[in-house]
Length: 558
Image (tube, rainbow, N blue to C red; front, top):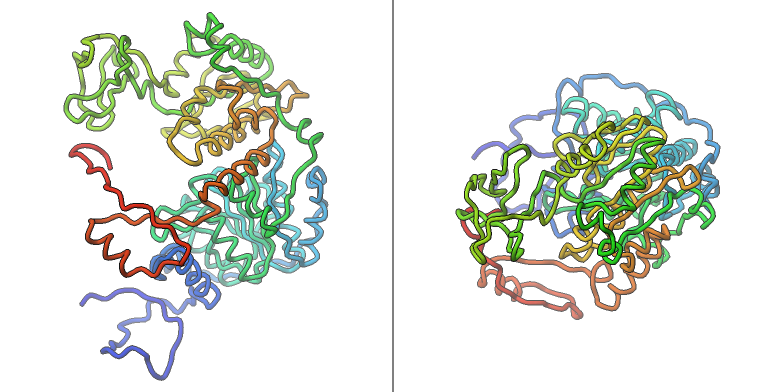
């Protein structure tokens, strides 16, 4: 057969394998990239997620690069001095947490960060305190933009050469070189995205995960490990400190506090009110009474907040959907507009002169009419970010309009007046903070058929609102959603922890995750029946189903 790559982890005199053995054809590299600690972690992750060790090792060890291995690396820099707590004093036990890290302790905390840009510097101070104790630190963030902010904060606080940056954007050679620097002990601090959760930091003293609710923290390859859970595992195995930080709070984070595994690290209400912007709501009743809202997408309050905000700086507009008009329906009967070839959704094209195009197969539709009522006029069910930018550009012709989304994600914008239209998660950081923010179409985020719809909507809203100036500086946020809904009320009060605690209690009553563990198995009826017959399930396990899965029609996405 063909040759395959592997790792040499141990040499023994005899093998417990009874079949024929083949000789090693070649030693590709003498570099010991898979040590006992990393191998043990990979086995533990594979066991936790019912996966194979080989799949986990593919995620844990980056592809080899020969030129990077040939580079000589020096000794690690001496430990820095313990940092001043700085803005950690804003939190009830923040200074104590840093003191415990500097003294070599292993505290575990769920940190609800105050809004504003200080979070990156606060993480850097926690890393410095850990390095001061002679131990290593690992920070995992969801994407390259926050990784760059923590990287900058560490460089300003510690100087060059004190940490490694592990991201996919770095390229194969640089990423492997940085990973080797960590493996060889040349650096003791790591900042990176998802794959960095396996970084072989020596004498690990602190693991940090930022914004654990972000979907980027869940690997899309088998066995689908989640960063928060892997770092919990590392904290328990290595007996090191653990810090889970976010502007918001997930149900899993609330469970860690409720179980006593971690302690809460929060600011008092006076600090929260001083740091957060003013949040105002526009509900269905307000829209019904608002003449401007019936004629346009934005109610009068939103227009006024935009006008006032543009006098003092940029204004952020968060739109849940990208594109121009991604969903259309018949104006008369509200029947969704579908492609006649594949039944996919028809979309309006920017500058298309009324031409429609299928969002699935790309076929153009030039003479659409409603198959239910025969109507020929369409209305927008959902308006995308590009269409919103176009409408705002016409309403404020003297103000520049910038968009940030999948096609082009902006990292920063200046502090001069401008309208910044962004999809959730792509909001750029404004110099000096945004003067105001509009959170549009809240129903589109809250109405998703998902267990986490409310939690995710609140996380996205708080993430955008945290980029706005505090209310003492005039910062205002308008959310267009029903004010009586729990996530909206949590945003108004700026209480993500209370929302997560209540959500956790309701899921406990219903037996939903994370209180219970759930696994889904799909396959043919015979295969599923055979699996259930062979599986050794716990005595208290509940089997739901089996239920038939819908068969995907030809031409439709899975």
